[in-house]
Image 1 (cartoon, helix red, strand yellow):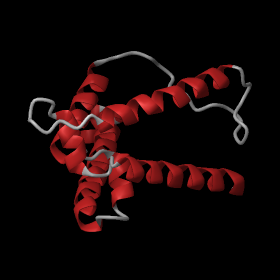
Image 2: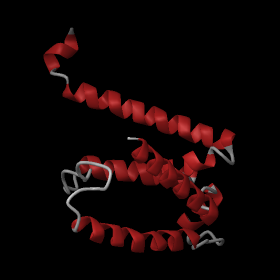
Image 3: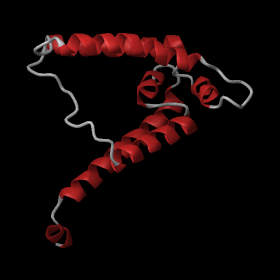
Length: 149
């Protein structure tokens, strides 16, 4: 248990340092990448994404040849690969939010260390969205008869 927590902590710190080093916690840099026709296009985010593809491809290749992870009883992989309306709507909301704020969850958490006031606003909104989704999901699974009560 302690080994899993330590590895997760080291991985999270490494991820945050990588985001900070690459400049991806700077909303202006992200917005500059997302606006290729704005005159100040910054391709840095494209290089960061491309640089993430190679290690991830290697990780998937290694995972295919493993019976189970080193510190767990089974891999935690998605149950389905279906692209449905909910997935597309979520992806669109994520993209719109990312474009408007210049932040997504990982960089926002990392940005709490450097720009806590600005990042806290985004993180609070993000956590509110998580809570609303959890409430909506629970309501969707409650039988209609018990909702009236």
